[in-house]
Length: 483
Image (tube, rainbow, N blue to C red; front, side):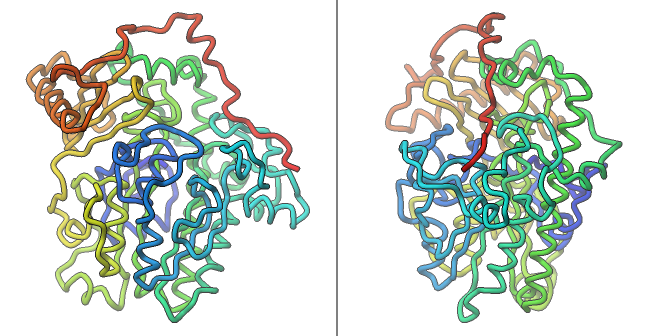
C-alpha cells in the first residue's frame, strides 16, 4: 500500500476512517520506506530486523528461507507472548511457523510447496472457501496477480480474502490465551493486485480520483524503469484504464479499513484496547501509473514510500506509558524502515533484542517526534548486476542503477512526488550522495558494484529497442482453477 492513500496523509477522496483514527491517536511517519520494495525481502526484513544485504536477499526469490532463528515472533514468544498471524506471510517453507504459535495463511493462490517443485495443497483461506462450497473459485474472477486490470469481486462479499483475514483476526483475539499478552500480525493481501474490490466499495469511488504524476525527466528513465513500462504497457495505458485501477485501489483500501475497525471493536469489547499498541504499515507500495510506472520494485515514491503509524494504548495507560505531555496525532519526518519493526516491538514489550541487527527501535521517536534514529537510510533492490540503490535522509533522495549507471536525484523535502530531477542541476549534491553510497558499499566484504573506489555498472546500454520492449509482455502471474 502506498503511503499517500490515506485521509490522514492528505488524499482528497479516500475513506480510511480506522487508519485515520490510529494516526490521530498515535504518530505517523511521513518518511517511512521499504528498503527492498518487493514482497519476500521486505517481509524477511520485518521478521528479522535485518536489511537485505545482511539477509542475502534483495530481490523476489521464491523458496528463500530465513537465515536466522532470531525472528520477531520467536523472540516475543520466548518473552512470554502468545504469537499469531493471519493472512499473507510469503516466507518459506510456507508452513514453517518461525515462532508463531498459530498461523492461518492467505497466500494469493500460490501452491504450498511450489518453490521446491512440490504440491502440498493450498492455503487456509482456499481450504475455508472449499468448505463454504466454492472450491477452486478464488481466482475465477480472471484477474492476474501482478496486473492492474479491474473487475469487481465475483463471489458473495463475505468470501473476499480481506473479509476472511479480518474475521479470523477477530477470532484470534477472542480465542487468545488470556493468561499471556498477545502479539497478532494481521497481514492483508490487498491492495496488491488482483484488483477485485467489492462492488459497493468500487461504486463509492465514482468521482474525484487523483491522476498520476509525471516528472519532467521521463526521457531519463533507466533500463529497469523501461522494463517496468514494457511489462506493464505503462506508456500506452488510456486515462480510463488508469482511473479504473486507481479507483479499485481506493476501494480495496477502504475495505481493509473496515476490517481494521472490526479488529479495534473486538479489542474494545474484549477489554484489551486500553493496553494495546498498533503498528500499521505495508511491505511496499505501488506506482499506479506515476511516471508511467506500475507495481513496485523501484525507489520512486509510489513504490517505496509506505504508511507507517505507531499508536500507543489509546486511553487508560496513556499517561503512564507516554507521559502527561505526550501529544497524539503528531507527524514526524524521522526516516524509518521495515527493519525497525522488530526492535520496536521488543522495546514495547520490554524485551532485549539481538545485538547484530540493522534496525533501530522507533520508540524514541514515538516519545519525541523530533528525534532521529538514523541519518541516512539505504535501499537495495534487484539481482546482482541489475540492482537499484537508494539513499535518503528524508529531504534528499539519490538513486543509482547498477545496470546502466543511471542516477536520479530528488529534493523530496520540497518535491515529494519527484517531478524535478536534479542530477544535472546540482552537481555538488549529486557527488555528495554518490560518495556516500560508495563509502557504504566499500565497507562490505566485496560488492561487484564497487571497483577502484568508484561505482561500476554491469553494462552501458541506455535504451531498450522496440523489439526488446515488445518481448517483455507477460501474463502477470495469472491463476487458474484450483482443484
